[in-house]
Length: 266
Image 1 (spheres, rainbow, N blue to C red):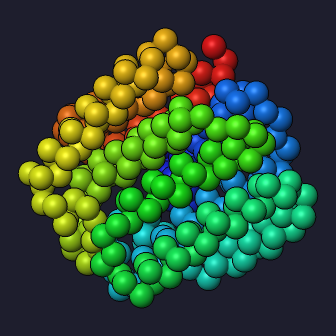
Image 2: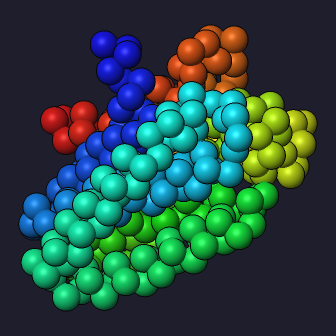
């Protein structure tokens, strides 16, 4: 079972599944009705972004340190072919999407393409965590937001909170991966700030996110969901001896995005 899940992680399918769970939760939260085409669009977009990013990283390395990058390097041509098929499927799927989703998605797609172009030309790009967190959160909110007419300040805050959670997730991963990233010549916020400053930044961000959940209203279910996600991430960061084994931090850290599926059952 662990062997199968390892490949699911390498292929970023766990990320895709988490995004689908979160979209389903937001569909219920906003009381909208989303077609399966919206779910397909989100899944294909996230998979393409993550896979393209991994392929670019793997291609730039002669001998990758991480198993994920080694997998992408060994299967480069096959993954490029599959990515082409997924891209074609995504383009065909656009025909069945609502015009509001297409319009908003075009803006987000432009941001994603700009990021990938920067990664290609600037290998030591250090804003990776910030951009990925922004694109992920906006991608999840894009469908429900396209279906509602009026926004409130709370909607913007919910998006900012999810950006913060995604950033915390990536920040913690970068902290665990800092030695491998340095060896492979990658850059990150952790390598830019240094270990001590990164520790302070991670803990500060986690505490601020927790305070925000309580201040906005812990009686709200979505704030309870956010608080549980943040708490698990902080535990992962504070117990490195437990979570560093077999990249367990990634399994648990990405697993928090399955929690919206659990909350749907409550």
